[in-house]
Length: 74
Image (cartoon, rainbow, N blue to C red; front, side, top):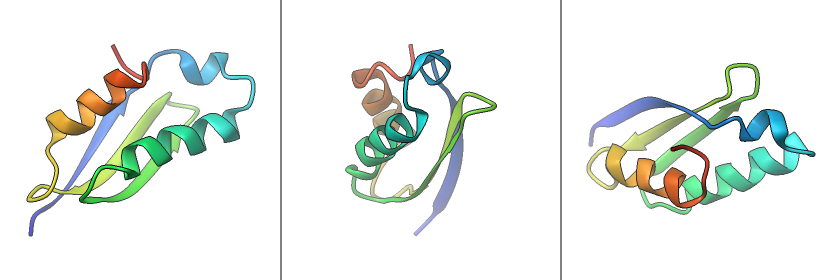
């Protein structure tokens, strides 16, 4: 089991979100729905999300695709 940590730069959606707490929960729930995700941290100051994941269960590409599907990244 290999645990990886990767930071993804988000669109300006955090700055535009009316309720950042709700937005952060939504994006966290979306990413955690992927099997193998251990932790998700949203940083509103850096407009980024950091994901700890088990590389044997989910890939960085799968996380990136999930972020793209939610329009969180380009």
